[in-house]
Image (cartoon, rainbow, N blue to C red; front, side, top):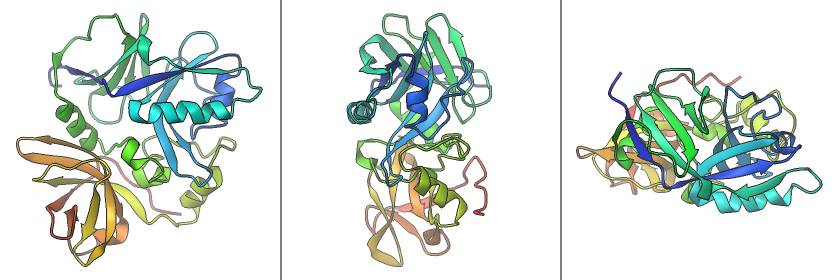
Amino acid sequence: MPEPTQLRLNDWGVIRAQGADAASFLHGQLTQDFALLDREHARLAGFCTAKGRLLATLVGWRGGDDEILLTLPAETLAATLKRLSMFVLRAKCKLTDASGEFAVYGLLGSSPVEAWTLVRDGAAVQIALPGAGRALRVQPLDAPPPAGAAMTPDDWAWAEAEAGMAWVRGATVEAFVPQMINFEVLGGVSFKKGCYPGQEIVARSQYRGTLKRRLQVFETDTAATVGQEIFHSADPDQPAGVVAGSGSRDGRTLLTAEIKLAALESGSLHLGSASGATLQPRALPYEIPPQE
């Protein structure tokens, strides 16, 4: 196990859901089961439109009494908070932006435990992520930084891509059905829970063999940006995919991209245009189950 490193994720925030109905309200809005959430685990979840398109991806866990905390990229937080609040109605649940109370850190080299396991450390929580030794730590804003040398944002983004994981960012809001970014493989979708916005479309994508796009990992020699289009050599006029996340180091870029599965069968993929930098496929660190 490498020496631990840490990065303050200044581009992440926290939403607090407080009240007797907090868990049941979120259970009815998000792709994962919050009704059965215990204190030793977190939930990866998505918030979808009625058409099953992801507005946000987030991680939730139980905080204090009648409290669920959600952490997510800050660029999607305000819109997510506003839209969720529209559906509270008579539920006993108050939603607030709690970003000013917490600091969110990404950790590499932490103790290997099953993804979404949660360890409490006083007022802080540490949540294991997919990928070797990766974790999120959420702690009070005035607490000292966690142990470990500082890493760069590119170090963290590279590790995210290695883990085959991407988050919805501002440039990719409504770009994906959950399975398009392998969200159900990573633990972000429950197919046993009740309805939530977009549930029928998400279920149809899972069980009717209609999924034609998936998240893949690629390496290239050019920097990439989230939302940047990807083109196939045989079809230069139509994008074959979109960059979902990327990190660079030593002159190389590792990125995750949502790609047409047919575009992987032959030819080559290029960043930005059909004449752009060539993307070299890298193996995903997990298995994609065959469509039923």
